[in-house]
Image (cartoon, rainbow, N blue to C red):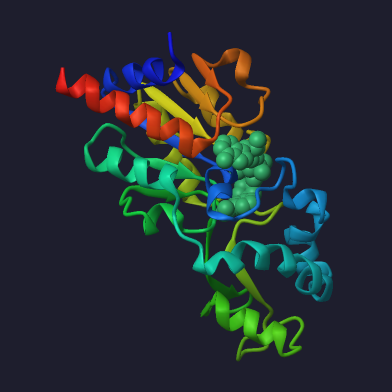
Length: 248
Ligand code: NAD
């Protein structure tokens, strides 16, 4: 059977579907992913974006690490693509429940999704590592551009982006995500290499999972269904079939 029909049938027949998205869902919005072909890790060292680098070498974190985040933030003007829009429609129509995303680009909310768990935070804000005062991320980037490296709070503490860096502990968002996955009948995974822990434990917490990803992942053999396809193309087709199923 056609993959789109099979996936549509599984979504339509499940009471509660959780969705997990990764950087791959946003490449069609012009934001590079990390590990796909042409991804950011082919140009940058992942160690640059670590909590250790921020604390022990803030100068280089800001000189190099911010370049990586800048690539994602550059996309400030980026718009949600058809994959984000289809998920927002499906959520509105109660075909899917929570969207759990590893992305820090805010594109699910921009597409109109209301139930979104951002397990790695969001690039809108930053905060002082000493007093916790919040700042807009653009303000922090402006300080960096003006040569204040590392950028500092009024209290003198170093400012950091409010996203989860390698080596950071995940906040309560991950616990909420895990709880939603356990309560769901199906987990639909879109555009993730599933190489980043602990998010890649979520498939094992689910009753069953389906993967839509351009390249193979190590979780493919355990999935109920796998479709190696672009997220936008796949989701549009799945959505058309869900509409047909609902119309009887
Ligand atoms: P990843 O880069 O490890 O993997 C992305 C996967 O998406 C790859 O396997 C690739 O084959 C696939 N892919 C690329 N384009 C696709 C498309 N159009 N349709 C379907 N699949 C496609 O990404 P990850 O698993 O999310 O882990 C990377 C981490 O990096 C995340 O934790 C995230 O926080 C961060 N990140 C976020 C953004 C963003 O916010 N847009 C961008 C880069 C990295």
